[in-house]
Length: 116
Image (cartoon, rainbow, N blue to C red; front, top):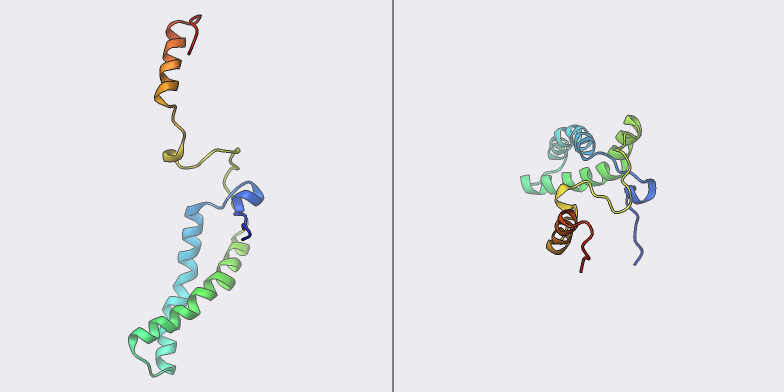
């Protein structure tokens, strides 16, 4: 199984999540507004079937047409690259282990003391 690299792995940076969410919202407005009523007027199906058929059209449109067009249109606004091993989430930051904190406290109090 081949690993597909993420944008951060290939370019050293990833698009902002806020920007992606905004582009997704903008991209979804027109298809969600126009496609279901258009299908309902053409196909004599129930409401659930119209929703499923609409999703079957909207999802590929978003993935292969609308989002690439919006990303191209609004250009490569990117966040600052991360250094290797660095994370954007504060919850993922490595915290020193209790033993490491103890060692640091000992070396700060007794600079010449041997550390085990």
